[in-house]
Length: 64
Image (tube, rainbow, N blue to C red):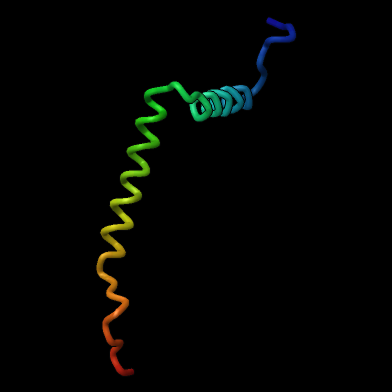
C-alpha cells in the first residue's frame, strides 16, 4: 500500500488523537463535551469550597 493518504509510523495515531480531541473541544453543540465541562467545573468548585471553608481570615492569629 502506498499513496498520499497512507499514514506511516505511530505518529499517525497521535495526530488522529489530537485531531479528535480538538474537534471534541471545539464542537459547541456536543452534549458530551458540555456535560464533561460542566461536571469538571462543578467538581472544581466543590473542591475549592471544601478546602477554603476552613480559613477564618478575621480570627486572631496565634502568637509565635
